[in-house]
Amino acid sequence: MKKFGLFAVVLALSACNPPAPATTNVAPVPVVVPANRPCTPAAPFIDRVWRVRESSAVAPGTLYVFLSDGTLLVAADKQKPSFWRWTYEHGALTMIEESVAYPTDILTLNDKEFTIRSHNPGEAVLITLVPVVGVSLAE
Image 1 (cartoon, rainbow, N blue to C red):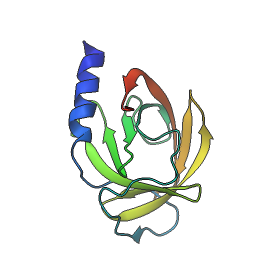
Image 2 (tube, rainbow, N blue to C red; image 1 turned 120 degrees about the horizontal axis):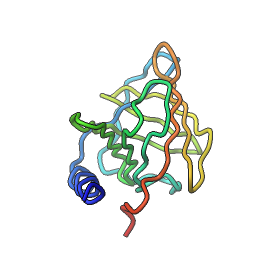
Image 3 (cartoon, one colour; image 1 turned 90 degrees about the horizontal axis):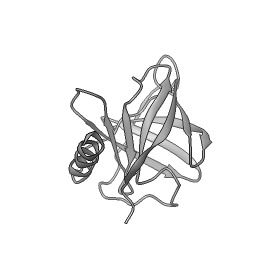
Image 4 (cartoon, helix red, strand yellow; image 1 turned 120 degrees about the vertical axis):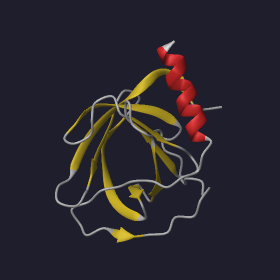
């Protein structure tokens, strides 16, 4: 029942089209990202539900979903979900929160782990994500 509830929340929230978050050691740069712009090229982290296994600043269990339209859904237990934006161009991932872009390094990306370092103001945030088993957004 818990998996169904999680799946229902992710599906319901992915239908919305709100903004996206980000982080960096470099001064944040305001950007405008067009809504519903498909990600090019496709990357294996897109349209998958990822769960934070460990992080230097993000609560374990927090969900990240990088939707193919450029929406990033971030959902933590007992908190209102956040809608950020993201881009992946020329091998560079950028997460965007409230129109502020944060370059994000992809340290590991495979079927079992997605580790990123988001360059937030002050200090970079290391996040290790694992796929949520049994939940897929792919058609």
